[in-house]
Length: 181
Image 1 (cartoon, one colour):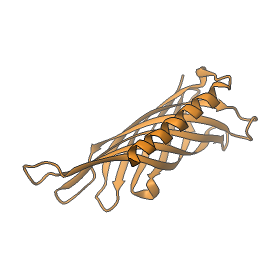
Image 2 (image 1 turned 60 degrees about the vertical axis):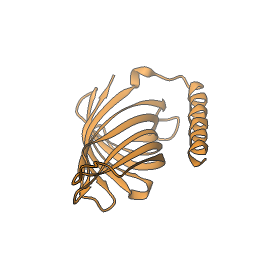
Image 3 (image 1 turned 90 degrees about the vertical axis):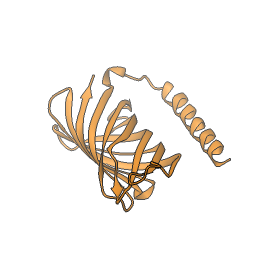
């Protein structure tokens, strides 16, 4: 019952976001794509590594909402090397929708705090047994984070960031590239 309620809430939020952003004159030429690797930590497990792919689109430009730009972003993360403790591992996958506020510190550097709702899926396994697994779980969660970037040129930014999911159960320390179309 809880999953159906969560799904309805998420679908309602997504529908509201689509209706709200459709009223803006979106400039898709300002869209960007992101790719990062992350040091992934889960609760008391040793760290692993994840890959992060995403993209974003500014919806309100600087001057309309203060000195920064508001953007919507979508992001997918997946464990490449699963966090572990002893023979136990957890493979994580998240798919998120974020709101971000991008503001320039100067012409070269920017900061981007962001918050979003994510679908998260955790797959727990016991690598020391022939059985191979002991459970999967998935749910909707909340993610908070901040990224900083260095503008290499007009199209490419070097980005670093930190995200935490559900108050820190899952964290990602990231480094990557952002490409502006």
